[in-house]
Length: 333
Image 1 (cartoon, one colour):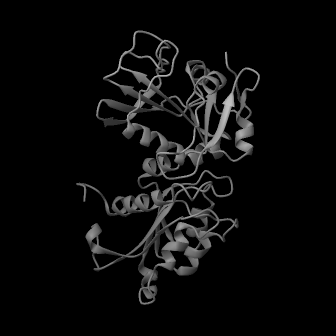
Image 2 (cartoon, rainbow, N blue to C red):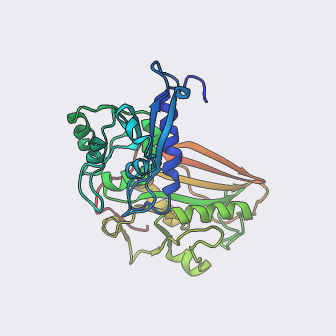
Image 3 (cartoon, rainbow, N blue to C red):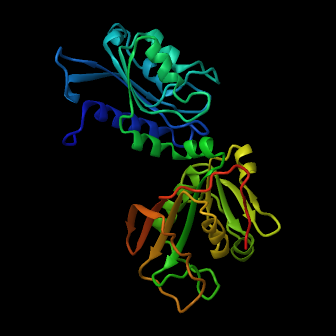
């Protein structure tokens, strides 16, 4: 256990661990984890003073939510303890009828004493209504435990519903001296290990995009071959076929990888239309010339660094936020 970690934070971290198990199959729903604990002593205060009696996560869209799975895992003998239990859930319980009944109503019916919520759900049909339903029923509710971590986990879901566009990840690989090709010809920059990580990313996102020049010159398959998971939807844009973000929204595409050449990447950067950038650099490879890698914008903030032998993958987030207007069209210069 980390120093100075509160009991609420301890069990919310477990919720986040569970939630990540639904990364591929929960879409387009968010990833959610839930944990139910009961005190083992009258003066319980630290994480060691509680016992987990149920836990679960949202496994697959259309099936029971994390709260449903957590209650289902409670043994018959522990059912009687629910009146003194605390339920931890990484995302606000739903309060509406969708493919499943409202989780807020289920929690109320189970008689749980307290609920701890990681973050409020931005989805229009929830947005605080779940918490309100619990409080109206007399349940003590705490909101905002590890809120940043909980929101980050579902950043694609939140971006999609708040801004009516997919979460956009710009991605390129460059040589040690900052080129993305060798005199205009494709060059192998990735290693087997980083290629695997690249395909892992593809399996986790909904669509992948390149420009016409890259498509015609390299004929990229843009599928998942070095990892397990579904292929992203393949998109190609050019001057005659610009990208309409409203169309992606209407097709329920929550995330988009942009792997195009310099012109395509610059078209997104020029409109500040990006949420993350991932740059892979091969520190052992140089070329005499070619196409320069895009310039990182001033708003780029380092959020991750992965080292794989001679290659490094650096992740950046957009400090200023991105274009948010529904209907934005990305046109190549």
